[in-house]
Image (cartoon, rainbow, N blue to C red; front, side):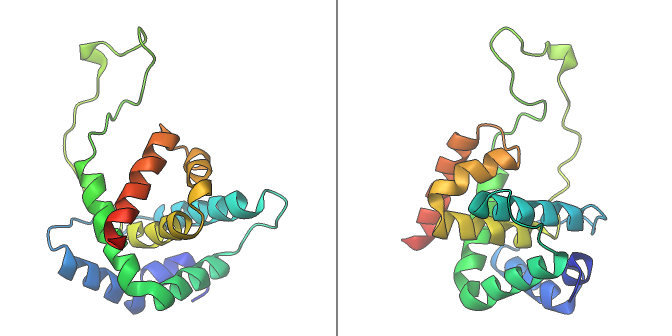
Length: 171
């Protein structure tokens, strides 16, 4: 498979998704979206830049696909366990869809977003979580930097929480 789109729609990836659904039957996925390949590639690039700096050449989609498939081939059981734990953690987050504001700059009640519907996860969440799994397992000191690069609010706190999620599957 040369492109991420081919990978995300392949029978191989659909089988991985089916395994996840067996372990977490209540998981909801949204329909395959056109932005998923670009989002996954951005995450892979940020992983590479976090590990090697910005002086490296940008990885290709084929390198991304190969790397994810290799990770799953080497450590599939642990990765799937981590994906289940990570998705469960995500479902329990008390997200503020309007973002974070400094004291005194918060939105007024009438200006806050209203949650209409929870759509579920994109199919690429498994592949994206493989990237995160590698960082938390093999490069935990770089995890906060990765989350900063991917614009996760409160990256240091979130990194600490993710390390606890990883520790929960190791016990």
